[in-house]
Amino acid sequence: MDKASGSSARKRIGDLLVEAGVITPEQLANALEISRKQRRKVGEVLVEQKLVSPAALLNFLSHQLSTPIVDLQRIQIRPDALRLIPEETARRFNILPLEVTDQTLTVAMDDPQNLDVIEALHTLTKKRIRPVLAMPSDIVGAINLHYRDVTEIVQQVRQFAEGAGEEAPETRVTAEVVAQTPIARTVDLIVAQAVRDRASDVHIEPQRDHLRIRFRIDGILHDTLRLPLSVHGPLITRIKVLANMNIAERRRPQDGQLTSTVGGNEVDVRVATMETSNGEMMVLRILDKSFSFIHLAELGLRPEVLQGYTRLLRSPFGMLLVSGPTGSGKTTTLYASLNQLDHKENNVMTIEDPVEYRFDGINQIQINPLADITFARGLRAMMRLDPDIILVGEIRDQETAQIAVQSALTGHLVLSSVHANDAPGSLLRLVDLGVDAFSLTSAVIGILAQRLVRRVCPHCSVLREGPVEEQIAYEQELGESRREFYYGSGCNFCAGTGYLGRMGVHELLIVSEAMRALLLRRASHAEMRAQALADGLVPMRRDGMLKVREGQTTPHEIIRNVYTIGLDEI
Image (cartoon, rainbow, N blue to C red; front, side, top):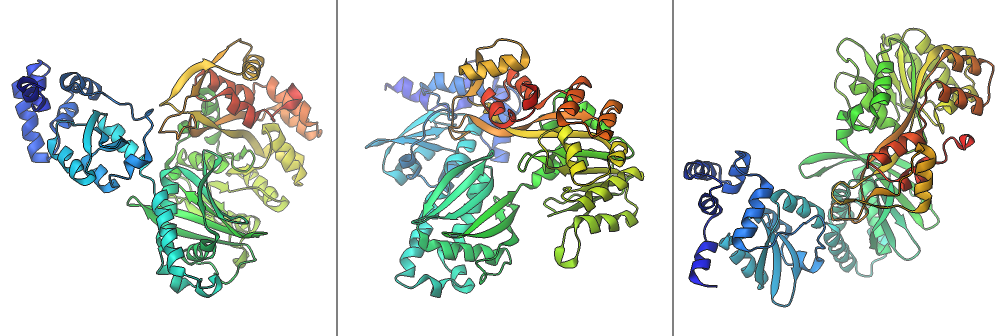
């Protein structure tokens, strides 16, 4: 490198932008002043002032400094490189190690001219530092994604195993001993990693020769850790202590709840245990408190379905049901419905098992069998508290169903969930529970049936030809031929799965007079579904394929989750 080029490379980004005529000297002086006062980078200030866009700034730097740009969403990041630089250092400098050779460490940076950072990394790693450019926000996201706690969990478990020596497990698994061992740290790390990975559940499953830890992410279980069986007892004991459960009871099922702090935010965790042939299994349900602030528009309801469902929510009385199997997002939809209601002028009350998320301005009641508070008894008592709107977590039995129907008939708006395959099937489900058909026809005003499907990852979505069976399913449902669909190619943000998050597919049944007549004469499910279609119901399969057309999900997801619905239509 000659002197001229070396001098150019040492110029600050602001000077380079002025020389190129992108900003004026006055604008740079103002940005430098703000940078000094707020201890921020000049580039950040210029972007904030909209004098230059983040992408333009990055491209300009790359051209001026002859430094390549890397796409952190797609590049493969090597674990051996990550191990060279601690997470704390990566966050402090906003850098990410990418790959390492014998003498060189490639590092993604947003300011490759910062010689102080490069020198600090060289001193730390004893490697020659090769900087490459990346978007600052992408670096932060990649740090959150790739600095996982799995390695530290394994280290903590190894310390515990070494410290335990040859002592028999039964003699050392006590609350006091476990609280002082690395197992306590291990529990914190597992919960923290589950939250970072967007897991809804953590499965702790003893196998014949190891302990398997699995995370459920976007509805799919993923193997996360394989630990020695020696940590099974201490791990279960530690979680039981935190969840106020009986550590001496191992054969009977138990439930509990604990609160953990992850990234400065409190996370509620619901705990359940059950004895298996290999020992005690435990599942941790991670409760995302942001669900209590979710709105209906975020659930994937198409505009016409959202409009119809919102209109039903404005009804002064009647029963509105959300149906689907376990894990189909019914509770989330009910909570989002509560957010649409007027809490100030109405007495909104819920009865749930359990109360997972708490709302301001709503009176929530927890089922408590020990106090003889069941859904039916609690609902009956609730009627004496002058409610306007009632949410019943789930209709499980005849008594609860009958009281809920009577509540809807006596001037209350009742929201609830029921297990049924589709919207018309929900009416038949209530009849099967013993509810009088005449009362039912007067009470139920609408049913929203739903399933959950995975969203195509927006970071790696590409248009490519789909399998023949997916093309056929799409054409049969929408009546149009199509060969190419949007799929996720797999990137760092979706952990290579091609999917990121989930959304609902729905069918909304607004109960018509014709449907009420069929219900009164105990018509078959096929007849009721045919009438629903005649009334304008858009089936879940079609709703799903419409979302495929928009690139939100894939035909595979609709076939996998929805194509058991309405088989009588095929």
